[in-house]
Image (cartoon, rainbow, N blue to C red; front, side, top):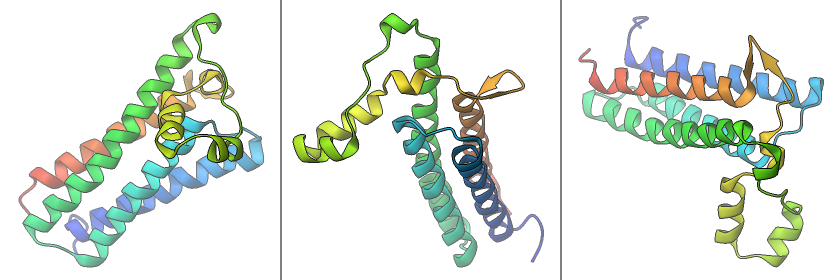
Length: 163
């Protein structure tokens, strides 16, 4: 198998997702940073992107299949980037303009319809605006946005490449 083959590059993208998730779990369980609702949505997007890439690596599709997998993975990367942008925006707001914190997920599951829970979680809360960790001057959602941009670039490359 060639290092530039679609099968191998999709597998590398899957490994990249495992590294991202390992870093997220490290920050949660070792550093002690609890993920906010938008962080959890971004994790789900990374997992979904990784699963699509793993399936593509196992399948080893032709041109049309590769483009389909790239488009599917790209949708997850696009949605993840959107939630990361939302969280970066929340972090830029003054404290008085932040949405209030949500009740627990257990309470919301008992009291609210599912679509309302999804709307509230995707809207973000004051806890999504907390900057608890930075590296090189960038917060976690800013790093997350950069990773999603990289995922989107990978998908565009997979979609457009000929070989």
